[in-house]
Image (cartoon, rainbow over all chains, first blue to last red; front, side, top):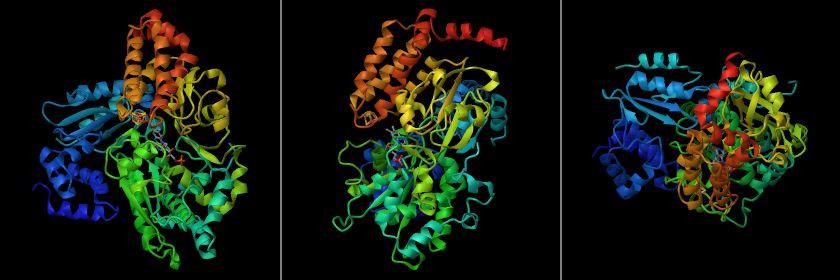
Amino acid sequence: MVLTDALKAEFTELACHYPERRAALIPALHRCQEELGGWLSPEIIEAMAEWFDMEPVEVFSVASFYPMFFLKPVGKHIVSVCRNISCDLRGSQELLDRVCQVTGAKAGTNSEDGRFYVEHVECQGSCANAPMMVVDGIYHEDLCPEKAEEILGGLDR
Amino acid sequence: MSHETYLLSRMERGDSHTLAGYEAQGGYAALKKILSEGTPPKDVTDVVKESGLRGRGGAGFPTGLKWSFMPNEEQDSRTRYMAVNADESEPGTCKDRVLMERDPHGLLEGCLIAAWAMSLHGVYIYVRGEYRMSYRRLEEAIQEARAAGLIGKNIQGTDFSCEIHMHKGAGAYICGEETGLMESLEGKRGHPRPKPPFPAGFGLWGQPTTVNNVESIFNVPFILERGADWFKAIGSKKSSGNFLCCISGHVEKPGVYEVPLGTPASTILNEHAGGVWRGHNLRAWIPGGSSTGFLRPEIIDTPMDHESLKEVGSMFGTGAMIILDQTASVVHSALVLMDFYEHESCGQCSQCREGTQWLAQVFQRIHDGQGRMEDIDLLSDISNGMAPGKTICALADAAAIPTHSVIRNFRDELVEYVQAGGHTAVSKKRALPMETV
Ligand SMILES: Cc1cc2nc3c(=O)[nH]c(=O)nc-3n(C[C@H](O)[C@H](O)[C@H](O)COP(=O)(O)O)c2cc1C
Ligand code: SF4
Ligand code: FES
């Protein structure tokens, strides 16, 4: 079983907040992704199905609906560049180009060395501080290609 | 700029996100007063109704009226919920985040007053998954409030009990639509539900539920404390109160500014946001988030309220202004938006699933220089086939409205794209004189 006891204890606690256990599924999938290697492998999906008393295909169908869940292995650092209108107006394309150049990954792919996964994402609610990117869950706002390069350069190997 | 900015006022203190900071500025006074006086719940709803507060999440529905749709407790003994919509994902919108990160107790107090007014058993705050800071601040605030006897059983020693729960989404625009949100909260794909039944009759887990936006609920304690008349006196006739205007794009000082409803868009642009950047001219503007359409510069004096924007063929939406300067391309920005709607359509309705795809494709080919004159009518036909009111939810409308606006207000640009051979050619033409500015 891939789920640790600590995680299962957390799920039990999460489920207390709802009249039906299933409502804890999405928050619990977040915890799996955070703790168990950065993506939701078929083994995790299966284990979650067992814990939630669902069919694996049902869990998969939920997980695949949400852009924040990865169903394939992703690089160590996840770089998400917003491509929506407010960011686009202030240079998100140049930002993405530079991110791709620095990491060697195209949008939607991992870099060859497995260090980075680069993606473009929709509006992240930083429109007044555009353009922006999210790196490993942390918001970086008011960017220019140079600043983005510096941020990526400062990440651990 | 001489108006009072009550929504953002407490944030001047560094500790505005803590209970101490909140209480030092009069926080929880409205709730405590209601509890100690035992104000009848219906009276609380009536004050909200009378204040004229309208939802800040996009549709502008009167908040008090929505609350009054919740079934009478004596006739319907089911468990009753509120879901606070903190999914904030309409492009251009970044206001709820400010409130949650910097004044979370203000939202909690609003939730508790709503819970009293509608005799709720529980409140769920659905925060989009990316908003980690908002989530953390709210979670900490809930812990503090619980420890202080403000959340949980027998609040302030009365027999009023209410739980507030946090819930984390996972990044899908459609989960901001109120029934998509409820499905998502139940642990499913965020597929909007056909209405009726409406949430007040059949909401979360089939129980009576009210869905309200963060900023709507945030206004409630102010209204209860200062009265409906105070609130009604701010703003325009049918749109009361201040709102948080996120202004983004080609402006000198993008930001979140608090202004009374009815403030002319030009005032927000010029006096708050420092005007169009680099001394450029205005080419187009969007008044209330990506779904409200591209408007002409000639009408930038339009008051930012529901009625005035409706009159010019648009909507107040989330009140998020997006500014395009003279070098920008409306066709290009429309393409960005159509790619977005195509990506975010949940796929249940064929008009929306196919329509958003088709719109994105036609805009793409016009953008790339392969467009034909007939494509302009085609865009119009496709959007007429999608909306209004032809689908389960309003995402189809949200894609059709900007499309219609481009055809109506910027037809010249569509024609220019077709004739000149697409984006590269048009931007070259447009950029040249600009270099000399
Ligand atoms: C596609 C779509 C996305 C929406 N996204 C949001 C959102 O992110 N936040 C929000 O508060 N309302 C959103 N809404 C509006 C909600 O359906 C609902 O009207 C609102 O949350 C009600 O709260 P209010 O009355 O306080 O405005 C969206 C609507 C649609 C059709
Ligand atoms: S209109 Fe679009 S997003 Fe809304 S339910 Fe239908 S397919 Fe889904
Ligand atoms: S458009 Fe990029 S954060 Fe909103």
